[in-house]
Length: 151
Image (cartoon, rainbow, N blue to C red; front, side, top):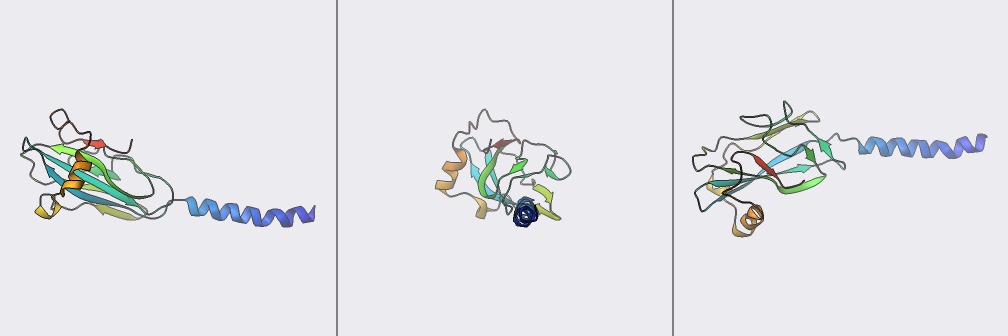
């Protein structure tokens, strides 16, 4: 009986260490990937993120995860591990003033996208613009709502 306890002890310690490592404790960083000017003068905005954890992190729409102006604009709420470009794209009207930021709070950190959305430096180059626009019906897309590219 004593030998079984000696053999099991390292396994229990290893399982506890593995479970602790799987607990998300690193921040989720939001990224504004840039914008595309559409033929009808509207804009398509692209957002991404980097989850530094080895597991998915869920941040519900609301106080800890929102796009300015409304708590839920269809933005992603499950953040997979790693860097994800163009996770959410949003078509906005030609009158868009550039004032929109995505914010999340997690693991003691708040991440907010840039406040300079319409800066020409954020205009996406052709290859990225093609990826952002793939499958987007600009005329039919709801305005100001994230089209979740990760579902």
